Image (cartoon, rainbow, N blue to C red):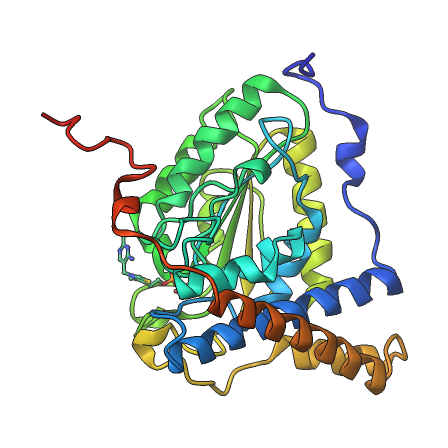
Length: 340
Ligand SMILES: Cc1ncc(C[n+]2csc(CCOP(=O)(O)OP(=O)(O)O)c2C)c(N)n1
């Protein structure tokens, strides 16, 4: 039986484990994994083992905490995720297999998200309610209220989580999300996330946005909102934990902005070169070593373990087949000839 519409289990208020040394080590491990996958995919793009690259290096401290806090599963009792192309750290922290990201980067037929037909970091994972990532930016902000509407009617503690970039918030889809989440008496459990990296491809935010604090816009709709240092995984984890507890228990929206780095520029289109921006993985690792939660040797071992794992995965992917010509009409909305 579905839980009733107007009650939520008390554990929604204390969602997620508290920060401990064990949790810090998990965060570090998952951040290293995510960074190495992205750097591997950039190398694939340069060496002819992949095509266009776009991804999330620099957003690990923003994505990993969320991945660990998601109520993962299928259907409205669990969280729905409406993500964008910089969300690899979220999906990997949820437990996605690194090899599957490499498969989509190389466009092999074994790519479980699109059979080699979408470009990299365009996830679609039905059993975890990860709806297909679209190359059109910001449309995810209007699909999120749709699943949240189902969750409102269903009850329980499942919420809809939407993540996207700052430039996209200038598009109408973002305003639609704020509006649809706050209709009086019909508020929706949506966690509205904004990853503020201060760029939209080559347009600086200050040329478009009147304020660096985009989350403020949610205030105009009566949505509680906050800005957090998205380069700090502990601050982000705590902020997300609180925000998620609010959405789960109150069944209402919350808007959280994380200020993040765009460490390798926009994508292949800007050359995917390393930029002088804060490196959240290096900073967090240095902090853990300073606090004696981690030694330099154990930190090195984490990097080596993931490097070995990802290298083996890449060698495997290089042996896998590409899609065949006849695959192009598989899994399309309108089968061939149906439009006649
Ligand atoms: C609807 C739509 N408009 C424009 C584009 C072209 N485009 C791709 S990425 C991008 C910039 C997005 O910037 P932001 O939302 O800040 O996210 P970031 O890439 O910086 O993480 C634009 C304009 C698109 N893909 N879809």
